Image (cartoon, rainbow, N blue to C red):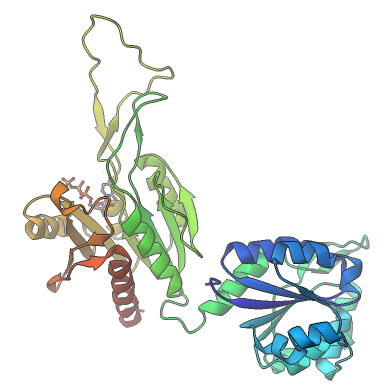
Length: 402
Ligand code: CTP
């Protein structure tokens, strides 16, 4: 959600300003660019040097600086962002905003901006409860200013109550929600599985398969881009974490099953992982030794839980739409159609994973979408395009079955 977004962060003079370098780092980690404006009060709690280092940008402080004004005038500063975030927002800056006072760079930028403004208030509980502040919050809310927090808890001044600035993670989550608004999958939750599973034979050996995780990861990224709050449960892969997705890493099918169950309820589940059907029955604590001259050890297997079948079973937590994958090497449509019926899912994305297709490790995929209405043959597409097209189909399906 935050990838490529430009955030103007206005830091006013509250003790919570010490959290701002962490906030900047968290926003940048999600792909946002952050430009900081520091008030005189803010600079008592956090230095321009620290903010400049974490934002990798100039920190703006002075309204009447000739060099700043020549480089980036205060009007441009306020307009070149997707959102203006005031954190911490003190009682003082909120009062100035409510009254339209512009007596420093921060308040001038706030008065000049035509972009959405979101505040994370931070102040003593009495200041927060004061009717003057309450009135200012009402004036600003009526004007469309958004608020994150404040939270209840211990205050730097020793008191307890409402007034703590929300933690950086909460602010990041609120901004992500803000950017989700209006997207096709806004208000939905998605679960995606991806990659192979590793089934331990002993502490050093395991059973695995050739799944790269590319397709599953691309689907999680596409659903998140379209506004769904997405959890990706991934087996071991070399894929980078998709932007804006909560990633839960697991190794075995049993762990994947537990993580998926934990992620419920969701609106849609797309199970693209190549889950091992079996696992070794016994896993010794120590490495199995090779005994010269002895027979190789046998491997007794037991069945793993079927995540797709379990999520598809009728019940309170059944997602509105369950999508499975069928990796086949022969009779693709027939096998996949039978798999859809057997597992009870709504759709199956079937693909040919015979070695000659290069699907497992490659970037392209030729799939067939099997629904209750029949089979759709999609042309060869990149895995990213398969993901995008599938996410669009999911958005359409969820829109008609609220
Ligand atoms: N799947 C699952 N849990 C399992 C096995 C498979 O969730 N224990 C899911 C996969 O993520 C995929 C679908 O089921 O969405 C089909 O997996 P596949 O291995 O092709 O199907 P199987 O039922 O194992 O059939 P077979 O191996 O005989 O083709």
